Image (cartoon, helix red, strand yellow):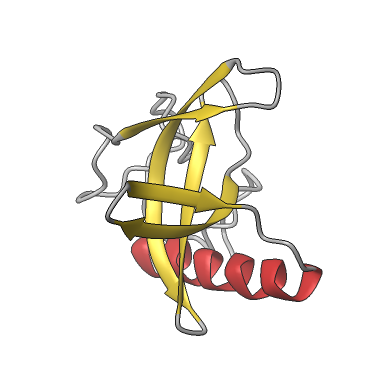
Amino acid sequence: MSNCTNGCGCDGHSHDHQKEHDCGCNGHNHGEHHHDHKKIYLTLTDNSQLECDVIDIFEANSKNYIAVLPKDSETALLYGFTDGEEGPQLNNIESDEEYAVATKAFLDTVNTDHE
């Protein structure tokens, strides 16, 4: 049972709710959590650029995925990820089933990092 009343989902583990920064971790003090995320720039359909922090690259069902956090956003975006001869490539996740698998793997990774 959680003693925390901040709605952060921490299940009462020790961290500082007052610490403020914009890395997307809701102010948690993660000890080994680093705030110097790599940047990636996504080209949108209107050819504008969206600056994002790379949160994690992870695997689910033998496929690689990437989680990115757009600047000034609190919502991570998930993409398929390959790193081939032409450099890193992000691919849209086409099916709801695959998106559910990638989301669960990402959340499991994030929750493991916070323990």
